[in-house]
Length: 142
Image (cartoon, rainbow, N blue to C red):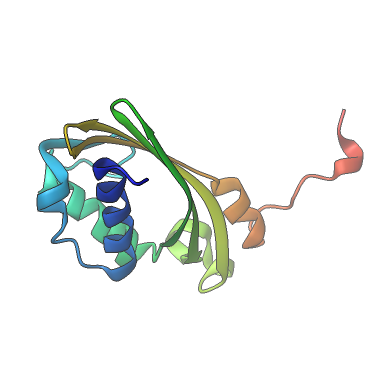
């Protein structure tokens, strides 16, 4: 059974995939904070919209939800993000190359709304897939 806050979190990821962030005004608190923002933004839906616009248009992330659950005032999602390499972020040799990474997202909720977000990405895997970093040699493990 999906909770109201799980539905709100899923709506955020659907919005990222579509690039339409109107839903944020209805699913996050007025003082919402994304603790993983790559740049400073104001709290609330407007700031989150700015971050997610960057995630959709610049980073080109598209998410597939693998798992979601909630407990108390928390919602947790595990998702796979698909994207393409960007020269300014990954280096010129990675430009346009596709990659997939595992991501984890934790939301603190207030009532039916999302109030805070923390995210974790497997950036090392992205750099290895893009050929920017050589994967470790298993034979050299101690």
